[in-house]
Length: 224
Image (cartoon, rainbow, N blue to C red; front, side, top):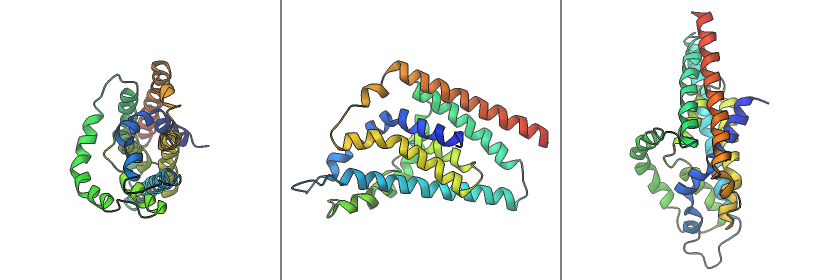
């Protein structure tokens, strides 16, 4: 199994507490206008998120790999992987709550989000539980440093398939918490907010980010 998939899953699982802060009220929002909210709504909403993540992961992964191939710039992906490694380090610092500079990245996405969000709002109130899927497809791109950081990772994966699988693995990591919250459970929240669990996970991600940078720089030095 590709270690990048495991890392992406870990980012989603550990960082899901951040997702709760940004998307925790969506479950109640989706029930507006429904006399008896369907139990399928959280499932379809999250399915839409995962499809969206995988699709955009495939697009950026495929586009960057094609660009590197067409330009014959063999070192391009290496430089970009260093860049992605830096984002992994920033993400680890954020998850560990050691430094919150990654939040500045979210502010950059807010300008674009104000043009995207009206499309999601038009889907409310939901006329059928399956309509939660396109809502989740759009709402999954709410400005989020975790999503953007993982997307840079998928961009340097080397192929559309790997890019899609990295983003899909990230989405799977967030799925347990988002589903449990959608069904009214908070059972994972205490674990994810545990300082011990959070610091261990952030430390492992930090080490993997530093290793990625070191490995990429070593390969680049051999090609230069």
